[in-house]
Image 1: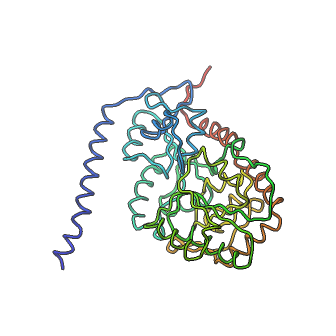
Image 2: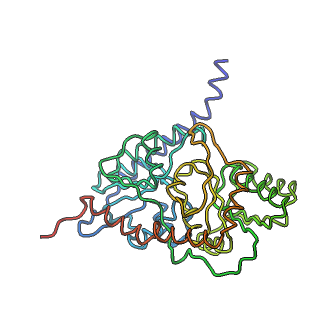
Image 3: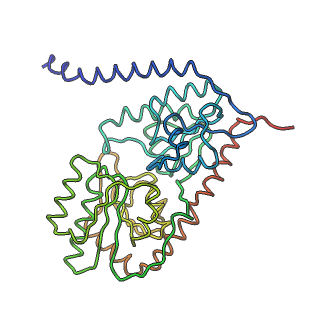
Length: 378
């Protein structure tokens, strides 16, 4: 038994040794590099990899999207910067070494903190949180994407530095905007994003089936990657089993440039992910005039509030995932559908008032001014 246990541990030991070797090599490479730290202007680096993607104008998705807004005002410069700006959900490789090096060069560290890893989400939560904690404890400023993000970080990563603020994600309200189109009484539902857990997709499918059985005119679009094991086959088979081929469209992954037209051609946005910290897709949907029907867990209540849609009660738990029932989801769709025109207007107005990218950038300028990176002028 002891021998078998040692053998099963061997692959993990080999992987760990390889990671440690790569980390040492990266640390040595950084030791040979220097940067110029400007004192007359705010200059940002977003780290290797992401910085190159921003310079090349690549279409970023997920946690990287917000950096495209920052890059417009603070272009990435990997050689001359006084702030290293990192996003917790899109950290570069060996981020702890990168942060230590940047600090030694004289740069300040800003961490945009999204969610944390927890037992119900992944078995690798300890390793993920260890890296996140290392970056957070070295940061000069932490920007939490919601109060829920801060609660999770306090619990799993530790207390923040002296400077921190809650600042939700943002959306370009000029690009993500409703379009005028005739409403014919059909409930056009959308779920979008990267779907790591099947319930985020399968529950809406069952809801569409239940509504169709009651002769409710309803259509569903599933956009984004089905990322759980064998997700594409499972969804395809479930659609066939429920006989929903005429009511459901599966589009697969989409780019950020395609997103505005995707949102604006639908009426409601469904987002059932458990304890989502601050989902961009929800903010983009509301800006596009889609009321959100979602899980009343995580940071959703802070984003949606009373005007952005309707949230369904579920338990908050770090150890188990919870989802609304199919019956509650159907009831919510019907309720929102009864006043869809008013709900669409309220969702759009709510997003424009609270999540404008211009306001978000102005808040960053204010926060950056609190960091001692510039030389005072006489």
